[in-house]
Image 1 (cartoon, each protein chain N blue to C red):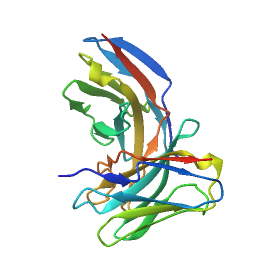
Image 2 (image 1 turned 90 degrees about the vertical axis):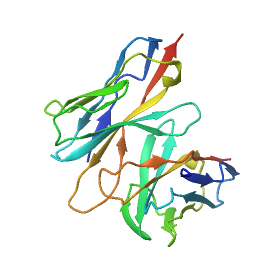
Image 3 (image 1 turned 180 degrees about the vertical axis):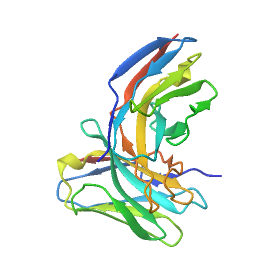
Image 4 (image 1 turned 60 degrees about the horizontal axis):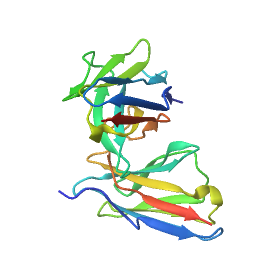
Length: 117
Length: 114
């Protein structure tokens, strides 16, 4: 079974600054996918960024980038130029890539990020 | 294109009752997954449906069941409700259901069991 750990329950950052959210996971799989999802106070879960484990290049999406360290089983999210709208719960999630098709996300416990003006 | 919709948004039930939640995926999406979100247990996978067949199931008791219709709409049912079933139930849809497909989440149904 896979486990995902987010060791920072809460974080805060000043507007326009950079913040990094940590995520580690445990799996015996070699091929898998990693995701960061954002859940603002409105509760709608939104995909932030996606990483395929067999791609060595770190994924980037505008102000969001990841540092994927496969050997260390680490998948951190960096938010640059933080904005007030980034205030939300952030969830790291794992999906294995089995031979048979299927979707099942395993989530970490979440990090509550507050961006301060 | 309309997003994932879930009805109802809020629901209050009493112990022992049963409840049915509905999820309409994004048009063209064929895979629907359900998750339970609670403060204590976090986000946990319930089950996934693809082409009207349950493809994956999480570690939940048999009181939790679901189904998918030919138009990909899905329902989940919880029978004999317990206080611990109070949670936000999230539905997510993806295009083909292949591993790695992005899952798009609905706003959730907040279930309160009294």
